[in-house]
Length: 223
Image 1 (cartoon, rainbow, N blue to C red):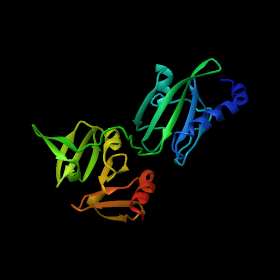
Image 2 (image 1 turned 45 degrees about the vertical axis):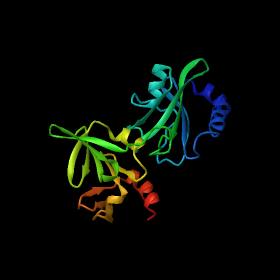
Image 3 (image 1 turned 30 degrees about the horizontal axis):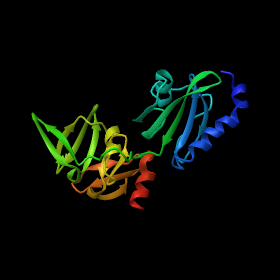
Image 4 (image 1 turned 180 degrees about the vertical axis):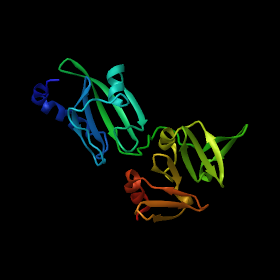
């Protein structure tokens, strides 16, 4: 790709950013890709960046937009970023070439018009049991399945962590790629011998807190 032509159009790229600032959160990020290459990136507060000139990964929103030439939105666990992100991608044409403009919203962004879960239905053996959401202590992704826990009992659900994090009440926080916890079931937060945070629940369960999520956890719990 000829980046000399792109450089000449830098003012146009900045115009996209200015227009979007009217409706996206201040800590959102904006990426623009043309064909198979990222040509622009403006970062919010996220702990990630996209290098201009980088190839568009096949598991990214930008790739899906360019391939389908249509709007795409999803919560993704991607190798591109350490934390799951909610992104909306729009097809654009730039100098006659197909591209994508992607708005990456803050981690753990919740979609206001989607109804939150009031309960989850879990499977135990051959039975399906609805469990009120406030009784669930934590949710785990294990061996390509999702499990939630109530009073030490384990239930299997077909809903993924990616879907859950956009439809759970604010009392639920993701602390790891594999765990979402209910803050009302936290007993204490400690450090292990390597200074990593460990979260202990009231039933004695201990869960690791990923570095990718510790900032958000500190913000919510104010410690």
